Length: 243
Image (cartoon, rainbow, N blue to C red):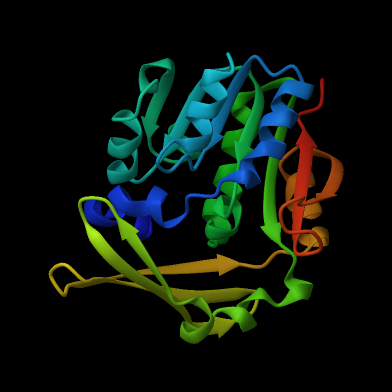
């Protein structure tokens, strides 16, 4: 099931406004261009920001997400007709012969259940052409990011046109490493209402990811640093072998 921030219509509608700086996507756009990727599958596309950027640059894009509310937002954006939208996870995607499969931001980490993660990697491999690439990122568990997730440190007030001020904050509600469960709280000043969104993240180290990729017939080509958060995230570039 999708987290409420993606699956609740009221929260999905303000998601982009709450996280307007998407400079983290620039390295992924550069990678797609550098690989000469004609067809790209964006798994966990959310409100479609990355999928639409890809399409605007001439890539053929298929974008999938299990959260219908987020897809409704994506489909309402300019240029949405250039993208093929699929409501579902990797198992809902047919073989595409894709040159590149992407999972940007926290998508990979939010697929915490072993069965779901296995199905995602299998689905990504099936969607790729031989020689095609898979790229995704995850927080480096050695940096212990969860220690910074406190209401005091995260409290932000965002003023959104037509909606008013929205206060957001996050806290850890459960920790059983490598799993960390967090709760985002969103308070709407206009009507005094409050909504929450819970998420469980899995902190995988590079050895675990490498083993998972190998188990699903994917060759790990490179582990990169995330340019927008140096030293804090691991970016994995894998490939479906030619044979």
